[in-house]
Image (tube, rainbow, N blue to C red; front, side):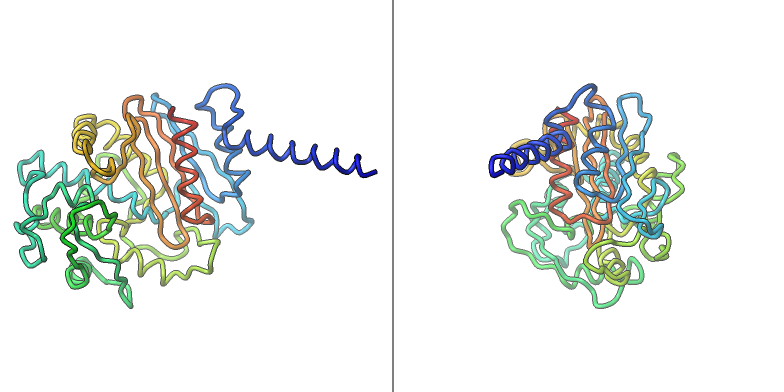
Length: 337
């Protein structure tokens, strides 16, 4: 009887191991670009959300996995979603456009725009783009900030300067870049971004102040309130204040980033000899670029090969930050190598 129990235990353990290896891509069969391994991964890890994948032909395929029966919690390809730090690449590409128009260069000092900021004479656009400015600001407002003027004032009031100029992932770097974009174009940051994206025909892109709670899938973890979501997004000016549908964000990255090899090559060049290979809102690993976005209750990421245009995106409202990082790593290992 004891041997029988041991045998059953071993069989169950082996079955669980096989399922895990299959879902994690270690026992892939067939085309690595197939949606099946990604769908299995989402099911195995109970990720409520969706992935968008495409090969070099540029036609997106949507993979959904539901872990809820409540329509209010469903992540849909045409439903608004807080893109969090995935917005940084939108800000980074807008700064690149300013550079192409000779309005600034990577060595332009921050003092040109905000001389009142401590250390601004020694902080360059390059350092803002790669998070080595030495500026820190982790403050959150007590109430949602109402507009760009309030966002800028809050940012300037709460930032500090540590003089180190070493890698430190800080939203304030991209908040300042967003404010600079606005100053250089004499329009609000949101207006500038939306105007430049008009050729893509995006239908679902809104500032946090324009979004109603029922337009967004509700967080399924930690009892995150809508107030906390708006507090976070309102203070992430240029680094997470926008909500977009997954489909429209995919359109942006595929058409405005992957189809701009000159920009990507320059960003890649700027990461050489850096402590962390990051510039313009994305990390670099060979020909692969990737980025993560995370606010309370929402997590998203994309991974793309900028040479082949192969890309995978993920949007979820029921995982934590560490599961987001694991998923991004899984995609890089199993879809891009």
